[in-house]
Length: 430
Image (cartoon, rainbow, N blue to C red; front, side):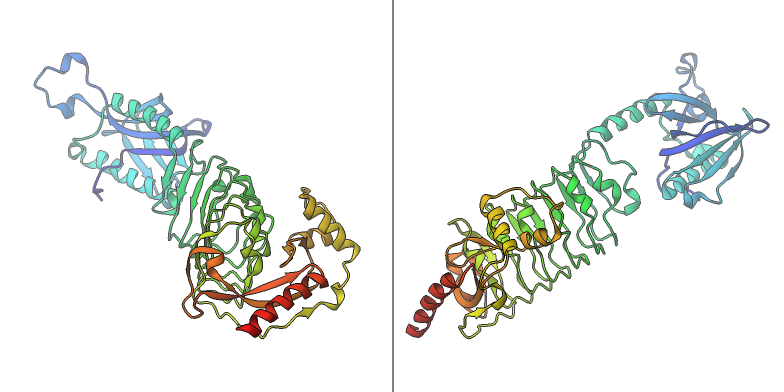
């Protein structure tokens, strides 16, 4: 069948040659091109038809270096294409008597390439627009240079994703293509600054994503995530979009200290990370359409500054009766708790190699609702209404007006009693 546009190049495949009566040659990474042979100078000015001056040939090339040249017109014995969908085929020639074996090619590209080859064999006069050998050689060299300097890649299908990404790639988008996981070659592209894989079926993010130390934008919206890797450390990430997933919690935001925009809308969150106050650059927070009963008081402790925008609409906030709830097991801090508080207060870098009981507590650290002292286990807690105007310049919260319930947690009984007394007086006056 004649393709709509002749496909004359088959790049990024492997080929080998085998004489009909000889051993198989070594398989090498190659590109194949169908082109017209440059006419001799003595024929360029004559009246001989151009198609007779310039026979069609097959070029077997590596980069810009021409490896072999084979005449095609009237020289094809057979094409074995049963496994073309798997990227495999064999072209048998008369002169020289050999087979050109193709493997590891893209199945779609190989099929279209063989369609053009069929035209060469049956109706070569229909192929009047084939480039010359010189043009193909130049184009091959230019393509290699362009690939080496390519910075942005938007893929129509997952088949278009090359086995090795260009060494200078910074931006890649694969949207709505039913991906179930992040491709391994994406996780190895250390130059990436932006990844957009929204609208797929990704259910988990491997911890290897921490290797992308230049990543600034990560869009995982509209996937099937139930959790975000707790060990992911993304120190350069500024924009994280996790909206439209199935997250029930998100912890350890402090591992992304440069976050400016965090979109968690349309998930199943019941709590927010208490270390959100450590995001000193956060300006836009979106948590609409979740299952939050209250906001963490730590959100009001963003180093004396406000968010530019906060969207918390569509949450079932619960305005609980003011009450101070003590944890009987934490009225007096344990030795482990005192060690954890010392680590947090001194801002000592800790690794996952610490004993598990320390790591787990440190990852759930919060700040006292009165003295802002860091802690991992609170002594007491209470819920009270807090003004959104105190935390954001612009906010969206339809049902509750300008205030939402905030969860206050305290490092000690004295701090809890002081704040509770003030809240009780305010409630009584109201």
